[in-house]
Figure 1: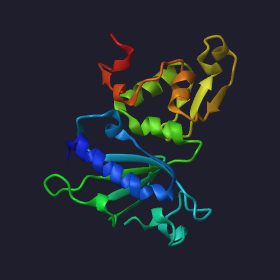
Figure 2: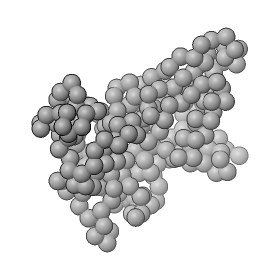
Figure 3: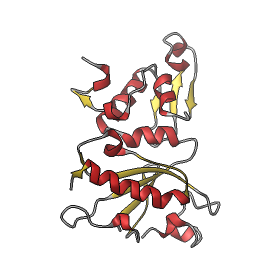
Figure 4: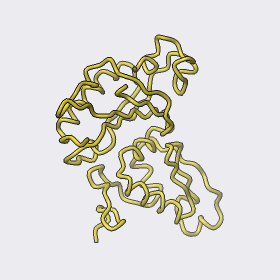
Amino acid sequence: MNVPLEIARTHAQQLVRLLLPHCERIEIAGSIRRGKEMVKDIDLVAIPKMTSSKSLFGSVSEVGDTDFFATLSTTVRLTANGRHILRGAMPLVLASEICDRRSIEVDVYIATAESWATLLLIRTGSAEHNIWMCGRAKACGGKLHADGSGLEVPGQYDPVLQRTANAQVIRAKTEEEIFKAMGLPYAEPCRRECVNARPVWMGR
């Protein structure tokens, strides 16, 4: 079900406020961050605070009862780098009904400090823009990992170094660093759509 942007953003911001005490970092991603008029679901990227050595990617049985991310119980799906790890009914207001008494689905993608920028980029989308970015990396001899684990760049995309340098993995701290490493100008989230398989920020 699609809902208006402002309604989805309000609920997303509410969820961010509720989760913030349990996170080192958290940000709204997906179509809300891109400013789409209608939103299908809420995407968040978060670095949770650790309460045990296993809490980041552990299941409910592996972490203590004090771990907040293990206590989320049917409107929220938790995924680690795109991998489903938990689904349950969230006992928070954010899981409340919106528009026609239907709830909006929420995905919380678990990141680390190293994967934050890449995962935020991928989970912001759009899907077509991600495909284009991955294709750009591949065409230059590298690889943009969709799971957020980093960007492989041969010779920083220098055409000469590409033929001699071994690929290195860059774990960028910001999205701007990812675009720069790929030899591209930074594109604001609102411009990460594609027309005829070409990013709108590239122009005609």
